[in-house]
Length: 268
Ligand SMILES: Cc1cc2nc3c(=O)[nH]c(=O)nc-3n(C[C@H](O)[C@H](O)[C@H](O)COP(=O)(O)OP(=O)(O)OC[C@H]3O[C@@H](n4cnc5c(N)ncnc54)[C@H](O)[C@@H]3O)c2cc1C
View 1: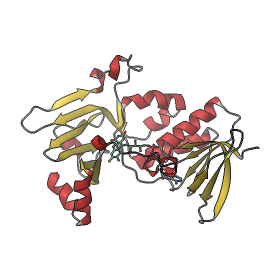
View 2: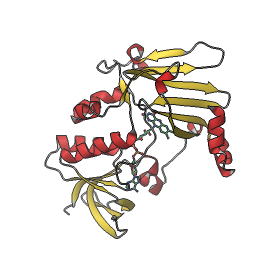
View 3: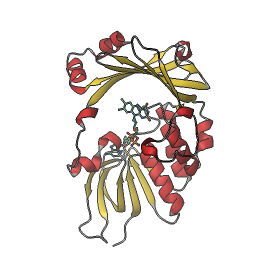
View 4: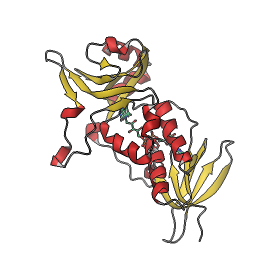
């Protein structure tokens, strides 16, 4: 049976764009589709990237586009604990874990506005020959009954109309949406990572912070508190992302009482 698409990727975030773009690069004759439920640019948390993604950006051929976005350059992290001297970790001193050889030496990354970053990556996938549809939500996936049969995705188009799309391969890159893992009931939670965050963007000069460094050499600042930790990420000369992370149950209870903003202010 012939599939409408060789590969359908659910989700157009960094994982979806990267997978689709690389699949197209190494299989130029294949039809590849990304289905993204939102319309880009859209807000997303997760702004402080790591040097490990630079070789991937190189392989995608998108490094120059990202370098031209005007993002704050990041050279490491600073950990701050009450009563201790701040512990600064520049990327140039970090090593790969488990004794594996380190990837090609890159000692910087970017503090990104995800709305812009994710759009550049998705548009780049399009320019590389991938078809990407925004405003298309995957509702259900029927997995193939035999190896040579396609999977069928039931999707809602931007008007809400449902239709079926055939896929030789389905890749779930829906992030916390977890489309396939929820459907297949294989989703599990790691108790030690059962945290939640409340965060906001603040108008300020992030480089006036004693530990955040400079625009070209910034650091993420991680401040430990008795019941969790704060992140401070300089996103531009005028904006910082500040978030408080703590146990899930605690934030759920505070949210129920409508006190999230007050809690974040208090912890800052
Ligand atoms: C509080 C918090 C702080 C973080 N901070 C950092 C950080 O500082 N640095 C860092 O590197 N990472 C950080 N992360 C992690 C980072 O946000 C994620 O790793 C990253 O966004 C994962 O990218 P992704 O492409 O897998 O998923 P996403 O970026 O979430 O993309 C998934 C896409 O799938 C789409 N989608 C979902 N369901 C459907 C559907 N049914 N149909 C179609 N499309 C769908 C969504 O709209 C979304 O655009 C943080 C995460 C959290 C929660």
